Image (cartoon, rainbow, N blue to C red; front, side):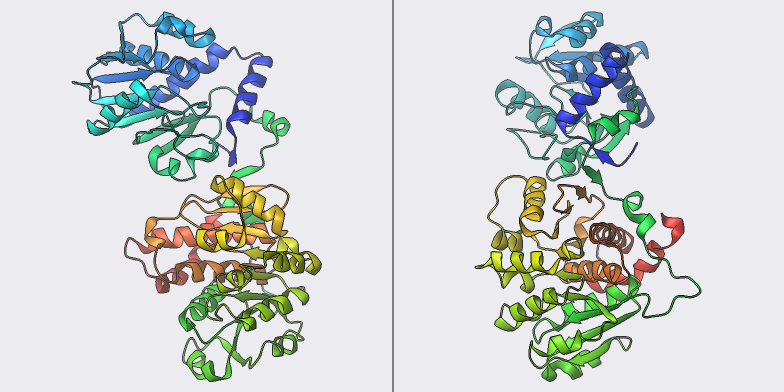
Length: 489
């Protein structure tokens, strides 16, 4: 399946367009149910199955699943949240094709089930899960019996990943045609377990009419723009990154500089306060170290046009010096990654930052990389993570990368990328500095801003997975070269 992510509304549009093109809705439902059965039989031997169905199309899928499992001689019970006679259309047709008993949720026992199928509500949930449905799903969860979700666990919003009322975790979620944002955004990502996407007969060509603007991150998104050195390449053609360091959190600067070089930047210079110069020199010998006594000297350093991109990471402090450095960098019109203190310093005056970004004209080459706390200091926005990030990109005029296990990257056009490969082990000191360094290193090589941010986020996540459960920030950069190889595209 492709990387495009469809909103709930877009998926409904795809279904409708498929029907208009001649694929009966009941055939789509049959294909959906059959695909779930195939995934179940790949993972489990014959056992007692309890299918929980709701009144809509998700419930219709559940009846198809029950019918096919029964045909394979699996013991199957069906529990319905409503009178099956209340179903309509394709769902009712499949409810009528089920030749076994239908038990009501009220008073039903879950005893004896070895596998539970959640086909109560799909991604298009219109109300919170509560009452008897919530009680039964909670019982299923506490039973310890593995659960398979059809489309998405009931209670998870397909557009946001947020829980509406109650949602019980699945070990496997089978969705159809394309994933939805809720499969990747927390807490939905955690509740879905393993997610597989299956074809049910909707033609991919329909995507050109739907025009999805959200994609799941991966090499397919950015590999064509990933710089690869050739025989004629020299260090300056691979980019010269300037990392603005401070006298606080020196390790953050060194981690970022090392990651930028591992990501392929030809040279990396650290602009250091004079009193910290020796400390920076004691680090990696491949880093160049320049003295930066005051912010105004930054303009002199940037007079060297070979320094084609800039990064500010923690270390400068929330100070007038940091603020002045950011403004001078933006006036230089260099591609830049702004992180941590470089964002927080504008907490009480974000419009000044945004106006300088607009005046710089670099827009897609200015990348902001806040975590949630830094984001909230800069943007007064409410809502889910995806919508907040997209709105922040429009307000700021920059590429915004909102960090987390479900990192979201957006630009001012409304296009967004969701990264879902980051392990929880990356929640360690310095990890974010490595991420900023990777992105800046790619930016220095001429990679477009959104592509550099997406590639950096994916490589960072993969490096964390390879490094293992007890990874520390210093481990990450060493894994980058293998992740840049063309064979990894």
